[in-house]
Length: 187
Image 1: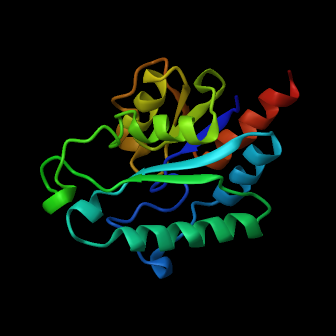
Image 2 (image 1 turned 180 degrees about the horizontal axis):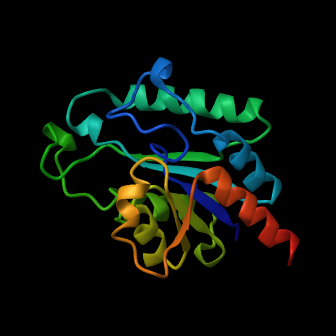
């Protein structure tokens, strides 16, 4: 079984913008691409897990999400990293339209996207982590036995106030990646 770092997308890899779907509006958080490279160099799979209720609300399509992910993958490759898989939840229990209006198990903190990744990529949750700017990301990971990390970018500063004392918190994905690399060198 393999170890994986699950990354929330908006507010973690890229600058938080409401209902982002256009490549031209996509802006990386400083150091995010370097962070992905560090995780890959340490032998981890990298999977993006993102709630995309903008699809449910009719603001953009699943194709828009996929195009944005192709761009993100290309950019991470150019920076010497790589993203192994993308998972997104297009549903919303109240605000969804048509088939997208449903109470699913893939919307974080639900386990759906993680379980799908586990099946497809043969992931060992005990050796895996989840990093995001919302406590729902951290909780989603911890519920499955993973290490959860909160970053202060995106919604992180607001979320930090509600965090438990035991929650691991870093300034950014890059900041965490540097610390994580250090941990590995000391083992």
